[in-house]
Image (cartoon, rainbow, N blue to C red):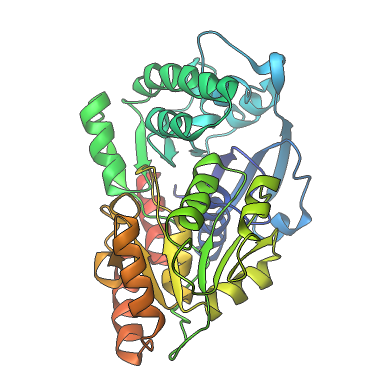
Length: 373
Protein backbone atom coordinates (compact mmCIF):
# COMPACT_ATOMS: atom_id res chain seq x y z
CA UNK A 1 0.00 0.00 0.00
CA UNK A 2 2.90 2.28 -0.89
CA UNK A 3 0.69 5.02 -2.36
CA UNK A 4 -1.55 4.92 0.75
CA UNK A 5 -4.87 4.53 -1.07
CA UNK A 6 -7.51 2.03 0.02
CA UNK A 7 -10.98 1.04 -1.15
CA UNK A 8 -13.30 0.13 1.74
CA UNK A 9 -16.59 -1.59 0.87
CA UNK A 10 -19.06 -1.20 3.74
CA UNK A 11 -22.22 -3.29 4.21
CA UNK A 12 -24.07 -0.17 5.46
CA UNK A 13 -23.56 3.59 5.72
CA UNK A 14 -21.19 3.83 8.73
CA UNK A 15 -22.57 7.10 10.09
CA UNK A 16 -23.85 7.66 12.70
CA UNK A 17 -22.01 4.92 14.63
CA UNK A 18 -25.14 3.83 16.45
CA UNK A 19 -24.83 0.04 16.33
CA UNK A 20 -21.99 -2.44 16.77
CA UNK A 21 -21.02 -3.25 13.18
CA UNK A 22 -20.75 0.33 11.93
CA UNK A 23 -18.80 1.45 15.03
CA UNK A 24 -15.87 -0.72 13.91
CA UNK A 25 -16.13 0.57 10.32
CA UNK A 26 -16.33 4.29 11.19
CA UNK A 27 -13.47 4.31 13.71
CA UNK A 28 -11.32 2.23 11.36
CA UNK A 29 -11.88 4.87 8.66
CA UNK A 30 -10.94 7.64 11.11
CA UNK A 31 -7.77 5.82 12.27
CA UNK A 32 -6.64 5.11 8.70
CA UNK A 33 -7.32 8.74 7.71
CA UNK A 34 -5.15 9.91 10.63
CA UNK A 35 -2.43 7.50 9.43
CA UNK A 36 -2.39 9.29 6.05
CA UNK A 37 -4.42 6.79 4.01
CA UNK A 38 -6.67 8.14 1.22
CA UNK A 39 -9.91 6.22 1.60
CA UNK A 40 -12.30 5.49 -1.25
CA UNK A 41 -15.46 4.46 0.58
CA UNK A 42 -18.23 2.41 -1.01
CA UNK A 43 -21.46 2.02 1.01
CA UNK A 44 -24.63 0.05 0.51
CA UNK A 45 -27.43 2.44 1.44
CA UNK A 46 -30.84 1.14 2.47
CA UNK A 47 -32.42 3.63 4.83
CA UNK A 48 -29.61 5.53 6.59
CA UNK A 49 -29.15 8.09 3.80
CA UNK A 50 -26.08 9.77 2.33
CA UNK A 51 -23.91 11.37 5.02
CA UNK A 52 -21.69 14.38 4.30
CA UNK A 53 -19.91 13.75 7.62
CA UNK A 54 -18.02 10.86 5.97
CA UNK A 55 -16.40 13.22 3.47
CA UNK A 56 -14.08 14.70 6.12
CA UNK A 57 -12.30 11.31 6.39
CA UNK A 58 -12.64 9.99 2.82
CA UNK A 59 -11.24 11.09 -0.53
CA UNK A 60 -14.52 10.01 -2.13
CA UNK A 61 -17.72 8.29 -1.02
CA UNK A 62 -19.99 6.22 -3.28
CA UNK A 63 -23.45 4.84 -2.47
CA UNK A 64 -25.15 1.77 -3.92
CA UNK A 65 -28.72 0.53 -3.45
CA UNK A 66 -29.16 -2.79 -1.68
CA UNK A 67 -31.37 -5.19 -3.65
CA UNK A 68 -33.91 -5.82 -0.90
CA UNK A 69 -36.76 -8.33 -0.84
CA UNK A 70 -37.23 -10.79 -3.74
CA UNK A 71 -34.82 -8.78 -5.98
CA UNK A 72 -31.89 -9.72 -3.75
CA UNK A 73 -32.96 -13.28 -3.04
CA UNK A 74 -30.91 -16.27 -4.23
CA UNK A 75 -31.27 -20.00 -3.57
CA UNK A 76 -27.49 -20.51 -3.69
CA UNK A 77 -25.99 -17.35 -2.14
CA UNK A 78 -26.83 -15.99 1.35
CA UNK A 79 -29.26 -13.06 1.21
CA UNK A 80 -26.85 -10.76 3.10
CA UNK A 81 -24.40 -11.31 0.20
CA UNK A 82 -26.67 -11.60 -2.87
CA UNK A 83 -28.54 -8.40 -1.95
CA UNK A 84 -25.23 -6.46 -2.12
CA UNK A 85 -24.38 -7.06 -5.78
CA UNK A 86 -23.76 -3.96 -7.90
CA UNK A 87 -21.99 -3.84 -11.29
CA UNK A 88 -20.90 -0.19 -10.85
CA UNK A 89 -19.16 -1.11 -7.61
CA UNK A 90 -17.10 -3.93 -9.16
CA UNK A 91 -16.15 -1.69 -12.11
CA UNK A 92 -14.93 1.08 -9.78
CA UNK A 93 -12.93 -1.37 -7.66
CA UNK A 94 -11.19 -2.77 -10.76
CA UNK A 95 -10.44 0.67 -12.27
CA UNK A 96 -7.15 1.21 -10.35
CA UNK A 97 -4.48 -0.74 -8.48
CA UNK A 98 -5.50 0.27 -4.95
CA UNK A 99 -6.05 -2.55 -2.41
CA UNK A 100 -9.56 -3.38 -1.16
CA UNK A 101 -10.94 -4.07 2.30
CA UNK A 102 -14.34 -5.80 2.24
CA UNK A 103 -16.25 -5.07 5.43
CA UNK A 104 -18.01 -8.28 6.40
CA UNK A 105 -18.82 -11.42 4.44
CA UNK A 106 -21.84 -9.34 3.30
CA UNK A 107 -19.86 -7.30 0.73
CA UNK A 108 -17.88 -10.09 -0.97
CA UNK A 109 -20.20 -11.07 -3.86
CA UNK A 110 -17.84 -9.63 -6.48
CA UNK A 111 -14.85 -11.30 -4.87
CA UNK A 112 -16.26 -14.84 -4.80
CA UNK A 113 -17.95 -14.59 -8.21
CA UNK A 114 -14.79 -13.65 -10.10
CA UNK A 115 -15.80 -10.03 -10.69
CA UNK A 116 -12.73 -8.56 -8.91
CA UNK A 117 -9.40 -8.79 -10.77
CA UNK A 118 -7.14 -7.74 -7.90
CA UNK A 119 -5.11 -9.96 -5.62
CA UNK A 120 -4.42 -7.34 -2.94
CA UNK A 121 -7.66 -7.71 -1.00
CA UNK A 122 -8.73 -8.59 2.53
CA UNK A 123 -12.02 -9.42 4.20
CA UNK A 124 -12.91 -8.06 7.63
CA UNK A 125 -14.87 -10.75 9.50
CA UNK A 126 -17.35 -9.24 11.95
CA UNK A 127 -18.60 -12.66 13.09
CA UNK A 128 -18.52 -16.32 12.21
CA UNK A 129 -21.69 -15.51 10.31
CA UNK A 130 -23.22 -18.97 9.93
CA UNK A 131 -22.99 -19.53 13.70
CA UNK A 132 -24.27 -16.04 14.43
CA UNK A 133 -27.38 -16.56 12.27
CA UNK A 134 -27.97 -19.99 13.76
CA UNK A 135 -27.84 -18.51 17.27
CA UNK A 136 -30.07 -15.58 16.28
CA UNK A 137 -32.60 -18.08 14.92
CA UNK A 138 -32.80 -19.78 18.29
CA UNK A 139 -33.92 -16.50 19.86
CA UNK A 140 -36.48 -15.52 17.21
CA UNK A 141 -40.14 -15.68 18.23
CA UNK A 142 -41.55 -15.60 14.69
CA UNK A 143 -41.67 -18.97 12.89
CA UNK A 144 -40.97 -17.25 9.55
CA UNK A 145 -37.97 -15.33 10.93
CA UNK A 146 -36.67 -18.49 12.62
CA UNK A 147 -36.90 -20.44 9.33
CA UNK A 148 -35.16 -17.59 7.46
CA UNK A 149 -32.30 -17.47 10.00
CA UNK A 150 -31.71 -21.24 9.77
CA UNK A 151 -31.83 -21.17 5.95
CA UNK A 152 -29.39 -18.25 5.86
CA UNK A 153 -27.12 -20.04 8.34
CA UNK A 154 -26.90 -23.11 6.07
CA UNK A 155 -26.09 -20.99 3.01
CA UNK A 156 -23.54 -18.96 4.97
CA UNK A 157 -21.67 -22.05 6.15
CA UNK A 158 -21.17 -23.13 2.53
CA UNK A 159 -20.38 -19.58 1.39
CA UNK A 160 -17.88 -18.76 4.16
CA UNK A 161 -15.80 -21.75 3.12
CA UNK A 162 -15.19 -20.06 -0.26
CA UNK A 163 -13.34 -17.26 1.57
CA UNK A 164 -10.69 -19.50 3.17
CA UNK A 165 -7.93 -18.65 0.64
CA UNK A 166 -8.23 -14.87 1.00
CA UNK A 167 -6.62 -12.63 3.63
CA UNK A 168 -9.04 -12.66 6.55
CA UNK A 169 -9.10 -10.26 9.51
CA UNK A 170 -11.21 -11.55 12.40
CA UNK A 171 -12.55 -9.22 15.08
CA UNK A 172 -11.95 -11.76 17.88
CA UNK A 173 -9.47 -14.51 18.72
CA UNK A 174 -12.41 -16.90 19.01
CA UNK A 175 -13.40 -16.24 15.38
CA UNK A 176 -9.80 -16.90 14.27
CA UNK A 177 -10.01 -20.34 15.91
CA UNK A 178 -13.41 -21.07 14.38
CA UNK A 179 -12.32 -20.15 10.83
CA UNK A 180 -9.21 -22.29 11.13
CA UNK A 181 -11.23 -25.18 12.53
CA UNK A 182 -14.36 -25.03 10.33
CA UNK A 183 -12.88 -23.82 7.04
CA UNK A 184 -9.13 -24.58 7.28
CA UNK A 185 -8.39 -20.88 6.71
CA UNK A 186 -4.64 -20.31 6.78
CA UNK A 187 -4.22 -16.61 5.96
CA UNK A 188 -6.20 -15.28 8.92
CA UNK A 189 -5.21 -13.00 11.78
CA UNK A 190 -6.79 -11.17 14.66
CA UNK A 191 -7.49 -7.46 14.07
CA UNK A 192 -9.30 -6.16 17.18
CA UNK A 193 -12.29 -3.83 17.04
CA UNK A 194 -11.80 -0.14 16.27
CA UNK A 195 -13.61 1.83 18.93
CA UNK A 196 -14.69 5.41 19.72
CA UNK A 197 -12.84 5.55 23.02
CA UNK A 198 -9.14 6.33 23.28
CA UNK A 199 -8.88 6.74 27.06
CA UNK A 200 -10.82 5.41 30.02
CA UNK A 201 -13.30 8.06 31.23
CA UNK A 202 -14.96 5.99 33.98
CA UNK A 203 -15.81 7.98 37.08
CA UNK A 204 -14.86 7.11 40.65
CA UNK A 205 -17.56 6.75 43.27
CA UNK A 206 -21.11 5.43 42.87
CA UNK A 207 -24.02 5.74 40.47
CA UNK A 208 -27.66 5.14 41.34
CA UNK A 209 -28.96 2.62 38.79
CA UNK A 210 -28.10 -0.58 36.92
CA UNK A 211 -27.98 -0.45 33.09
CA UNK A 212 -28.49 -2.87 30.20
CA UNK A 213 -27.99 -1.35 26.74
CA UNK A 214 -28.04 -2.58 23.16
CA UNK A 215 -29.88 -2.51 19.84
CA UNK A 216 -33.26 -3.68 21.14
CA UNK A 217 -34.62 -4.46 17.66
CA UNK A 218 -32.21 -7.45 17.57
CA UNK A 219 -34.06 -10.50 18.92
CA UNK A 220 -31.13 -11.66 21.06
CA UNK A 221 -30.88 -8.29 22.82
CA UNK A 222 -34.62 -8.15 23.45
CA UNK A 223 -34.48 -11.67 24.91
CA UNK A 224 -31.61 -10.62 27.21
CA UNK A 225 -33.58 -7.58 28.40
CA UNK A 226 -36.74 -9.66 29.00
CA UNK A 227 -34.67 -12.31 30.80
CA UNK A 228 -33.15 -9.69 33.13
CA UNK A 229 -36.58 -8.18 33.87
CA UNK A 230 -38.29 -11.51 34.59
CA UNK A 231 -35.47 -13.52 36.18
CA UNK A 232 -33.37 -10.91 38.03
CA UNK A 233 -35.36 -7.74 38.68
CA UNK A 234 -38.54 -9.64 39.46
CA UNK A 235 -37.09 -9.90 43.01
CA UNK A 236 -34.10 -7.54 43.07
CA UNK A 237 -35.57 -4.12 43.86
CA UNK A 238 -32.69 -1.97 42.62
CA UNK A 239 -33.29 0.74 39.95
CA UNK A 240 -32.81 -0.91 36.53
CA UNK A 241 -32.68 0.97 33.21
CA UNK A 242 -32.81 -0.61 29.74
CA UNK A 243 -31.66 1.65 26.89
CA UNK A 244 -31.40 1.18 23.14
CA UNK A 245 -32.78 1.36 19.63
CA UNK A 246 -36.33 0.43 18.64
CA UNK A 247 -37.68 -1.58 21.60
CA UNK A 248 -40.89 -3.53 20.95
CA UNK A 249 -44.13 -2.50 22.65
CA UNK A 250 -44.02 -5.81 24.54
CA UNK A 251 -40.63 -4.90 26.04
CA UNK A 252 -41.73 -1.33 26.85
CA UNK A 253 -44.83 -2.62 28.68
CA UNK A 254 -42.81 -5.19 30.61
CA UNK A 255 -40.17 -2.64 31.64
CA UNK A 256 -42.83 -0.32 33.06
CA UNK A 257 -44.62 -2.99 35.08
CA UNK A 258 -42.51 -2.45 38.18
CA UNK A 259 -41.71 0.90 39.83
CA UNK A 260 -37.94 0.22 39.92
CA UNK A 261 -37.54 -0.71 36.20
CA UNK A 262 -37.85 1.49 33.09
CA UNK A 263 -36.78 1.81 29.46
CA UNK A 264 -35.13 4.63 27.49
CA UNK A 265 -36.06 4.19 23.82
CA UNK A 266 -33.82 5.49 21.01
CA UNK A 267 -31.52 7.68 23.09
CA UNK A 268 -29.30 10.13 21.20
CA UNK A 269 -25.57 9.40 21.37
CA UNK A 270 -25.02 12.03 24.09
CA UNK A 271 -27.84 10.63 26.23
CA UNK A 272 -26.59 7.05 25.84
CA UNK A 273 -23.06 8.09 26.80
CA UNK A 274 -24.50 9.91 29.81
CA UNK A 275 -26.37 6.77 30.92
CA UNK A 276 -23.25 4.61 30.52
CA UNK A 277 -21.15 7.07 32.54
CA UNK A 278 -23.69 7.47 35.36
CA UNK A 279 -24.68 3.81 35.87
CA UNK A 280 -23.26 2.05 38.91
CA UNK A 281 -23.42 -1.46 37.38
CA UNK A 282 -23.55 -2.59 33.74
CA UNK A 283 -25.33 -5.90 33.21
CA UNK A 284 -24.18 -7.37 29.91
CA UNK A 285 -25.26 -10.97 29.39
CA UNK A 286 -25.06 -12.38 25.84
CA UNK A 287 -26.65 -15.44 24.30
CA UNK A 288 -24.31 -15.59 21.29
CA UNK A 289 -20.52 -16.02 21.44
CA UNK A 290 -19.63 -14.73 17.98
CA UNK A 291 -17.45 -11.66 17.38
CA UNK A 292 -16.79 -9.20 20.16
CA UNK A 293 -19.55 -7.14 21.70
CA UNK A 294 -18.75 -3.46 21.21
CA UNK A 295 -21.20 -2.50 23.95
CA UNK A 296 -18.85 -4.29 26.39
CA UNK A 297 -15.92 -2.17 25.20
CA UNK A 298 -17.99 0.99 25.42
CA UNK A 299 -19.00 0.20 28.99
CA UNK A 300 -15.42 -0.80 29.90
CA UNK A 301 -14.02 2.54 28.70
CA UNK A 302 -16.76 4.74 30.13
CA UNK A 303 -18.63 2.85 32.86
CA UNK A 304 -18.15 1.49 36.36
CA UNK A 305 -18.72 -2.14 37.43
CA UNK A 306 -19.29 -4.73 34.69
CA UNK A 307 -21.18 -8.01 35.15
CA UNK A 308 -20.97 -10.42 32.20
CA UNK A 309 -21.55 -14.08 31.37
CA UNK A 310 -19.20 -16.55 29.67
CA UNK A 311 -20.56 -15.86 26.17
CA UNK A 312 -19.96 -12.13 26.51
CA UNK A 313 -16.42 -12.28 27.89
CA UNK A 314 -14.90 -15.34 26.20
CA UNK A 315 -11.45 -14.61 24.71
CA UNK A 316 -11.86 -10.82 24.85
CA UNK A 317 -8.82 -10.17 27.05
CA UNK A 318 -11.10 -8.19 29.40
CA UNK A 319 -11.75 -10.98 31.91
CA UNK A 320 -9.87 -9.30 34.77
CA UNK A 321 -11.99 -6.14 34.71
CA UNK A 322 -15.37 -7.92 34.70
CA UNK A 323 -17.38 -9.88 37.25
CA UNK A 324 -18.52 -13.23 35.83
CA UNK A 325 -22.10 -14.36 36.55
CA UNK A 326 -23.91 -17.03 34.53
CA UNK A 327 -27.32 -17.47 36.17
CA UNK A 328 -29.97 -15.30 37.88
CA UNK A 329 -28.78 -16.19 41.39
CA UNK A 330 -25.19 -15.15 40.65
CA UNK A 331 -26.32 -11.99 38.85
CA UNK A 332 -28.58 -10.94 41.75
CA UNK A 333 -25.80 -11.51 44.27
CA UNK A 334 -23.12 -9.58 42.37
CA UNK A 335 -25.49 -6.78 41.31
CA UNK A 336 -26.49 -6.18 44.93
CA UNK A 337 -22.84 -6.37 46.08
CA UNK A 338 -21.44 -4.04 43.41
CA UNK A 339 -24.36 -1.61 43.61
CA UNK A 340 -23.14 -0.75 47.12
CA UNK A 341 -19.40 -0.75 46.30
CA UNK A 342 -17.70 2.48 45.22
CA UNK A 343 -15.67 2.33 42.00
CA UNK A 344 -12.05 3.24 42.80
CA UNK A 345 -9.11 4.96 41.13
CA UNK A 346 -7.19 1.65 41.37
CA UNK A 347 -9.88 -0.06 39.27
CA UNK A 348 -9.73 2.75 36.69
CA UNK A 349 -5.93 2.36 36.44
CA UNK A 350 -6.22 -1.42 35.96
CA UNK A 351 -8.78 -0.90 33.21
CA UNK A 352 -6.71 1.79 31.48
CA UNK A 353 -3.66 -0.50 31.36
CA UNK A 354 -5.70 -3.44 30.08
CA UNK A 355 -7.61 -1.55 27.40
CA UNK A 356 -4.60 0.32 26.04
CA UNK A 357 -2.79 -3.00 25.73
CA UNK A 358 -5.58 -4.64 23.71
CA UNK A 359 -7.46 -1.79 21.96
CA UNK A 360 -5.37 0.91 20.28
CA UNK A 361 -6.89 2.26 17.05
CA UNK A 362 -3.52 3.68 15.97
CA UNK A 363 -1.72 0.36 16.45
CA UNK A 364 -4.46 -1.57 14.65
CA UNK A 365 -4.47 0.88 11.72
CA UNK A 366 -0.74 0.21 11.31
CA UNK A 367 -1.43 -3.53 11.37
CA UNK A 368 -4.06 -3.17 8.65
CA UNK A 369 -1.73 -1.09 6.46
CA UNK A 370 0.92 -3.82 6.78
CA UNK A 371 -1.57 -6.54 5.81
CA UNK A 372 -2.56 -4.68 2.64
CA UNK A 373 0.93 -3.43 1.72
